[in-house]
Image 1 (cartoon, rainbow, N blue to C red):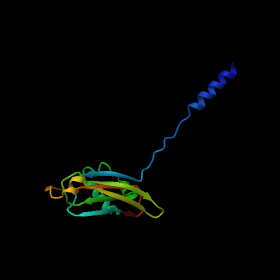
Image 2: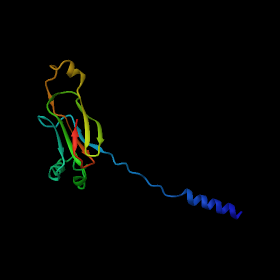
Image 3: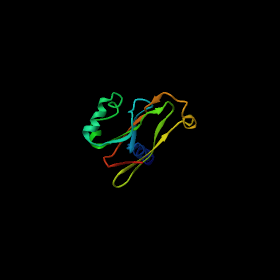
Image 4: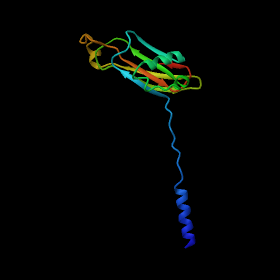
Length: 143
């Protein structure tokens, strides 16, 4: 009987051990995307200097998503498609790969099929943009 009690007590102690939860740190995070609100020209800008990154805190939507320690640990990329005829345009982060010396960001610009088939239909313009946080301070290459 003593052996049975000792066995169940040992089983209970070892089965109730604590488990460690692993928090996965993703390489990138899309902070903001909008079909309107970008600039009048098409550009991709990499923000890696602290004073450049601090300007993102002035945006009310972004300041909730950026922490102060991100200035030292992360780079940011602003992808702006410029003026486009009104439609369902999108910027997709196709792949983000980390090498020994840099980060390679591959993007795709998606255009609606109706605009490609007949571009003269649209008269209003939109200004799509995207802001991406890269969780690394390595140099960034955009493809």
